[in-house]
Image 1 (cartoon, one colour):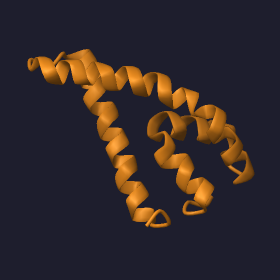
Image 2 (cartoon, one colour):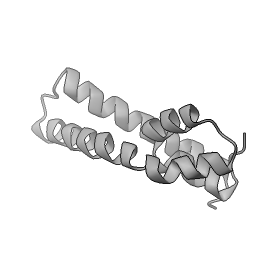
Image 3 (cartoon, one colour):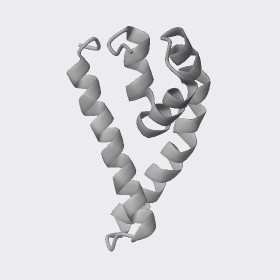
Length: 93
C-alpha cells in the first residue's frame, strides 16, 4: 500500500488542506474556540516540524537527483508525505 502513488497524493492534499485550515485561522480566527485552538496548534506543529524535516529530506532529494529548492518547497508544503514516497521510489523525477 505504501507503494501506491494515489495514497501519497491524497495525503499531500490533506497536508495542503491542513495548511489552509491553519493559515485561515491565523488570518481570521475561528469563532469556534476548539477550531481556533486547533488551527493554532496545527500551525505551530507544522511550522516547526516541516522545516525540521529538511535534515532528512535534503539527503533523500539529493540521492533522487532533485534540486535543493524543489526539496525545500515540497518539504515545507507536504512534509513526510512528499519525501517518504521519494525515498520509497514511488515518486520519481
